[in-house]
Length: 68
Length: 378
Image 1 (cartoon, rainbow over the protein chains, first blue to last red):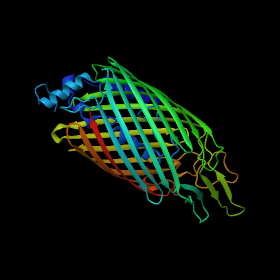
Image 2: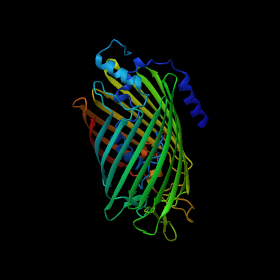
Image 3: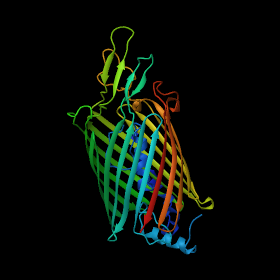
């Protein structure tokens, strides 16, 4: 499982033709961002993680909570 | 459709800004010479018959001295309502029993992240703090990013550590540690002028106190007396979360498809899948999130006689699934001011579990939430 995941990650880096800097206007749009509005993300992630067993995957170093 | 040098001036400005930025830098808006943003978000969340949460969040992020970036946020969770406490089969089948008195709690939390850019490499350090009546958490993280392949590929590696302390309002003497180490690797790849994908894997190794001091299981047997046992979980938890995010903008539709998928696995026996698909178009963002998880090895709504060494009847560790549709409306007042609102609904139920029914004892959770937010760019 972990090996497959690492293999898939490595494949991303080699499978695509480079996109020139002047072609990146659309990539810089707000709605292309991976993490979006920090206030929204923070509030919504807590809402789900308090009721589900799974969490994480995007970053490290976040604080925990005693979720009711 | 690819943007070219000959397009409108706003688009050209945007492209020039994108030139100077790594893939995941601050979002850039055409026509605004911004170096930062400050925002306020207010969440209201209400479960039917259970908890109510109000959470104001203040956040900001900015670039300074050309190569530095800072991001910080502070929030307060104001929690009230009834919390499931006891699972008992006194009525014939196992059901949750709520606390008699209303639970009141307040959680103060804050975090800060500082990033320094060294050309194609950036290094970030972060700290997070969270404090409530019966739980305290301090965490830090370090993350490196390297842009390669003419900045079409970003490699990510990170390490994090958190030290938590678990207490209980029922037992003021309870003060148990829980320590977690996290490791993350990932890559973000530009696929085309309108598409990118990011995939990250995070491993966490946790040790310490994982019991929920408020949860109890009260089981009646056909013969003999009933048993009342506390929640007892393993003293370690090793997790893997693999998150893949895809973004594809369709210029002709002025819309962007956002799709996130996470696979989660831990050594408690839980396997979970989360899929969220968002279609952001004309500043309206309908989203649908689906979640499904299997049960922890030690979950059961009833206890055995004699009781197992580890056991929990907490239904968050059972097999169930969840569906959550939401609608977000974003109004860009001008180049600097953005106002947004979101309405969402959450339903977790046993029959939403992927591949067959989940645990029968799972009691359906229905909740609604609303978010309003204001962002000012400067």
